[in-house]
Length: 277
Image 1 (cartoon, rainbow, N blue to C red):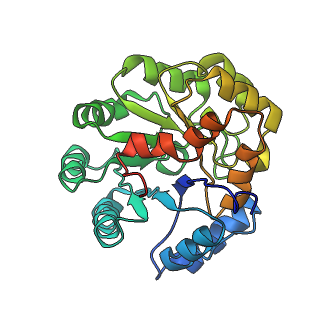
Image 2 (cartoon, one colour; image 1 turned 120 degrees about the vertical axis):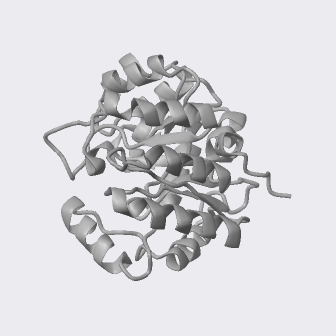
């Protein structure tokens, strides 16, 4: 890899795994839907082996409760992963807005020292600026939990964008103390709108799938216009090879300290992850 002979600390802020019992089925279904050949088999073990092989020293796992009944198992699993492998994984939890105990789940997530949650508007069936989600946003802000959203286009719902940049901006403005991460640099396949509504605002943007879908020069330009401490390396592994994601940033026309911030320092600061010795 192009960073092998350099002292690059690489943290991937956007990785997905699945329980061993369902990984093959889940990855197979999503691969067929997306027409993407997955980089891993979706299990925690295989994902770590392949991340480490391509120079990723740390990863943030993003879990999604696609139904209310999944909350408990997902959050319990996240807590177990964080306790068993704290030197490598930072696993986030999730809640479902239709669950009666969603706010109580957030309290439990905070008590378990899980630093944030992932919500996926397409998979969970809501618009990002839907008022039904506001109590969750308020509680996350109160507890200091990071809130990561899928943003922009998704193959699961190609004709309806559930988190377009303009709607995301409404949430940013309405909840100024909320730590919001918008995946895919503010909106997959919607980077012109992201530039208009999100660049320079109070929001973290990750680079998940950008190496696969975005113009490198365009994202390079947008990075330079956004706060330097609010861009995170992300791959969306298994849907993009993390080595490609990191190389894409390293190839950009950015100062070295800016690259280091994106590749690890910003993610470590956001999630309170200790620096490597």
